[in-house]
Image (cartoon, rainbow, N blue to C red):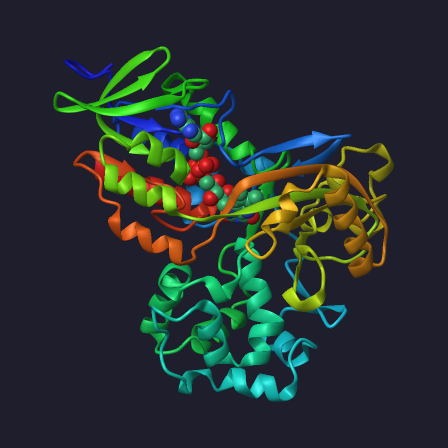
Length: 443
Ligand SMILES: Cc1cc2nc3c(=O)[nH]c(=O)nc-3n(C[C@H](O)[C@H](O)[C@H](O)COP(=O)(O)OP(=O)(O)OC[C@H]3O[C@@H](n4cnc5c(N)ncnc54)[C@H](O)[C@@H]3O)c2cc1C
């Protein structure tokens, strides 16, 4: 325990991946800390579990093994449990069939998703004007790569990541990273071609034998003496030279605080301490999502597909968990022993529905959502599907729409830091990188 007036030098609110990775790096740096978590489980939105023996993911389906992720895998000795994605193809459902998204030069030449004329327009991108922070992602993609490339490829792939509508997403919120890349290379095509020639994404997509949840679980196991589960923070106050974190079990006095909770919760926690920031955080839109896990005998290989929005489907996209990771179709089954991926007796698929374009659908009952997801899956994949689970997230993905302009009003008092998907990108690698950088600042 820290000497003097504090229980710990740093108090972390939330034991999602950001809070837990922060605990890990604070520990490395020798900084005394305590993590307070409302739930009885660590991991936040990362949730994996088995239903009828099949492994389901209710949060991230995979993560990229970037350097900060790799560092944790090595530190936690998880290498033996890592599963690396096999086929990494991504598809778009457009004009009634699945087209392969081109992430290599050969695939670009062959793809059915773009006409020859559209391909020529894409190649002309370096001659276009640079990205403008005030235009929308839809305007930028259309202006730089052409209407067809936006409609058939970039719109579905980019919008699909967030369950969002690129026509509602200003570049300054949704594509700030892309603007930095353009500034560096003078255009967007050059770095895309460079990446394609190196074989696609720079870091492989991974999961673990027992799902993505294994990572926060291992972090929790390694740092459990500093993590208090079932301890929701009810208020954050200034006290002396530091802060008081109020919980039902008493007050925890800390010198500095890091809040990693969802924006609406953070807004409530900061209402007295930083009222302007609290009001701004309460304004941020998140897209509601429904997730339907399906069991089906599909024989396609890859990450999955996104649906072009004018195809008349309610499904936003489907993750092909069955083919992504070599996990016996998601089930520990003797019948599957020794069988190749394609031969197995069915595997798990995750369908995403709702999002910015169709938020009401998320309120439909389980039967309706299950029926929509399985019927549309059969339409696209040509095989029937059985529903394994239906789940909803009222506040799923960050919308990165104009409501995110409110972030300019988010200022926090000295010694109080925010770290989660409204302070940097939402992906797990980005969460871990931000935690690592913050631990350095705090040590
Ligand atoms: C459906 C879905 C799919 C995704 N897919 C991918 C993917 O494929 N790949 C990828 O890289 N990323 C993906 N992401 C993004 C990524 O999973 C999240 O951005 C990331 O896990 C968020 O972690 P976090 O710790 O910042 O926040 P959270 O996970 O939200 O953690 C916040 C924690 O704070 C706790 N808390 C709340 N209130 C209190 C309180 N009052 N006191 C104490 N604790 C409190 C919560 O219980 C929670 O544990 C996905 C996200 C979702 C929702």
